Amino acid sequence: MFEQSNSMASTKKNVVVVGAGPAGLLATIFILRRNLQSNPTKYNVILVDPGADYGKMDGDALSRARSWMIGLSCHGLSAIREVPDLYEKYIHGLGIDIAKARLGLTKRIKFEFDASEFLPEDSAFTVDRNYICAALSRYINDNFADDENFISHYDTRALYVDAEKHCLIARPQDHPDLTIDYDILLGCDGIRSVVRNAFLTTHRDFEFNLRGTFGYGKSIHVTLPPNVVEGTFMFVNNALPGWISFILPETGRKMNVALGTTRNKECHPALKSSDPSVVADYFRKHWHAFDLDADDAGKQWVGQGWNTISQVHCNFYHSLKLSALLLGDAAHATSPQIGQGMNTALADASALNALLDEYMDDWSMVLPKFSEQRVKEGNALTDLSFYTFSLNPSTQIKLMIKAQIRQTLNSFFPWLVDPDPMNEIPKGMKLSEAYDRMTKLGVIGRIRDENDSIMRDHFERSVGMVTASEAARDVRTKCLLYVLPIAAAVCAVFFRK
Image 1: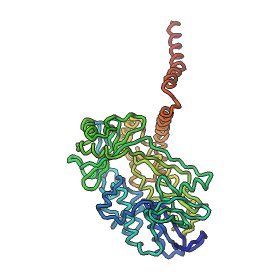
Image 2 (image 1 turned 120 degrees about the vertical axis):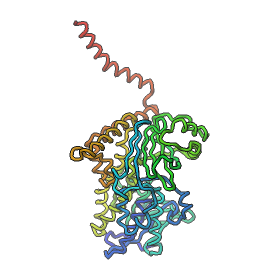
Image 3 (image 1 turned 90 degrees about the horizontal axis):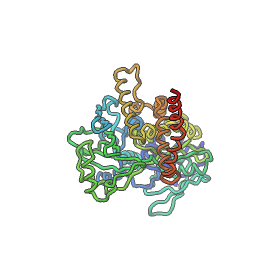
Image 4 (image 1 turned 180 degrees about the vertical axis):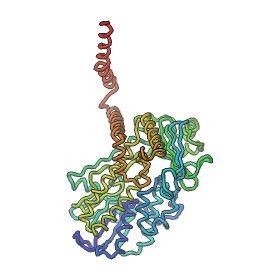
């Protein structure tokens, strides 16, 4: 193992990166590249991840390891392009450029836009998350596989962070547990972060919240229909009764159709069926976005479990006691509604590298500054993702109509009406700025109140805190408090006449 140094002023530091997702891999690249600079601080980097190295898979193996389609846009692409040749030789061409956007409010009310109307050229595409991880890993393998300053431990699960000894305990699949000493610890280990657990046990003032997004759903892959332009992104309201759909273009003339609904809605029995033909018949009857192979959709539907998504909120991302940072999903896991989760994770790695430049690798300054810069972006990400989409279908339609009206007015009167802030994020607007603008437009506060109320009401009823009879009594009480006095006043006026 590398020589250990516990001094923050040392010129050789051991950096342990836990998690080989987008944030962890790009952070690894940035830190290893710092060894190529003339600054006095050099780094040993140890990468630990419980999964396989996607960068060593061939095309067939990687295709079998596909995960989910996500959008890569300005914030993520800007971070990647900071590394010479990374975008041009490893990332470019992995996904499908966004060409059109289609918004379906109802079966009949639909809008379609050219991507050029709201996105700069070559600024956004959709790609499988694991393809990005594979590309980043290939860059590391090509440039640093024989570097004595780099070690990777794949198929190795992080178990515990010893805060006092500054070491990570990790368990390989087929070997004894490892004790890995560190000077700096980067927690890029996702929503169930082991590094974040160490924050909880080390800091009394660390506030952490992991909460579901009140939805569940499934995703299927369909062949691109003849009447749909390749590269079309879609949002379809009521794609199936009570279900919304985000549809992203895939490579190989495919589309990824994600369907979801909320927990307070009863799922139709056909969608719970384990019989593909029953599900297929339901799709034939109700699916209206475009033509698809219902039989194939039914087979894919019953062949998978239900997907749920959770969000993470933290009040700070650094620990001087641990000499640690949280990046990516460990800091701000989010729902995919605005397509900025991976982009923000990549931007975390970029922000860390910029701070190391600014403070000349003085981690005692870098750690708190990272929180100062990134906590507002991470929390803006999660809140924009959840509180700009209403759990109330009628409210959601109104939001979409208002956003479209604003965008139309902006196109005619840009000096009078500002663009929709949500459309500016893929172009480079900071998430915290978009959050500020959406708050001032009244959207965040209104939707937060409504969504939180819906979720709380469902929880109270589902666990029996509030029963149906009590709910009915509450209605009667409101009638007594509000309706009867009004009726009495009306009667008094009538009889005086």
